[in-house]
Length: 113
Image 1: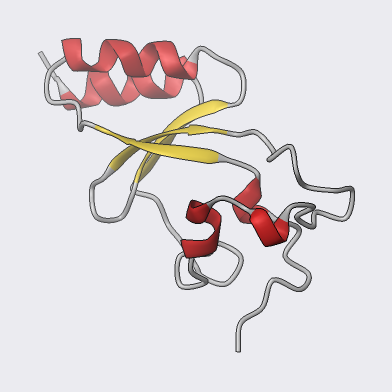
Image 2: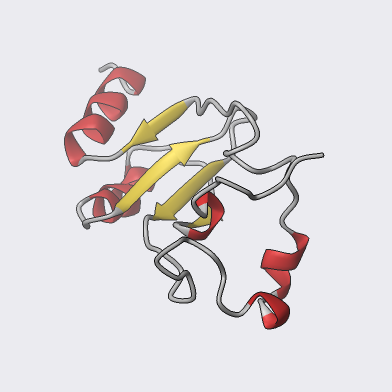
């Protein structure tokens, strides 16, 4: 059985929100703005789903990375399954853009003039 023991709260250290997949050069403008911010990146999942990710710890993690509001944690935390957990699963993203330069290179390669 999979458990959270020794995990260090991996799932509690980011917020990822699905975004529309960009199709045109103009569609990438917001994505460029996202990655210009500290602790924000954009990634593409194995299935082609695009996400913006905010790398920020939950305010309810203690120094040992344990949830201090476990009994009243939000529903999204309760529904998060270990099948989705990056601690228990090998997860490979198609693309990860952490900097403006990485994203601009992808755009240049995608839209060869």
